[in-house]
Image 1 (tube, one colour):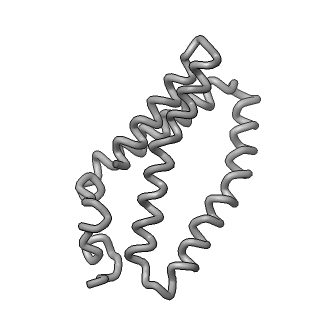
Image 2 (image 1 turned 90 degrees about the horizontal axis):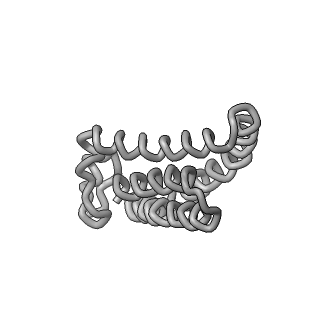
Image 3 (image 1 turned 90 degrees about the vertical axis):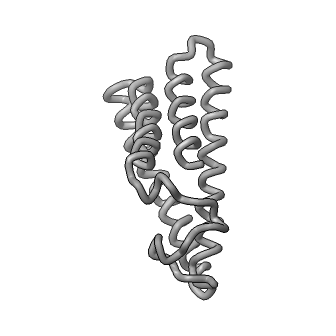
Length: 131
């Protein structure tokens, strides 16, 4: 799902950059976020399933807080880069970044074969054994 999600998201971002009609650009950009949201939901399910119960709150809090803290920094850097290089290039590079995540997951043997959350062997991924 991560490979398909980030691949579709990256292609959606790139297609949005090159669409010549504003409503199409908006639609493609919105559609590109759907698989990313699905993937994030799967990651949170993984955390809630395999992180020890007494640490789930802390791990979830740190994960969400890190994401929220990175958002204004990324927005600032994206704005600076947009002023310096143009918004089209910045959005295209971001789309390429999503595609890089796809290629990384394809290239990494352990990530390429991650099973469904309920079928994961936690020990193989450095997680606790819940059985």
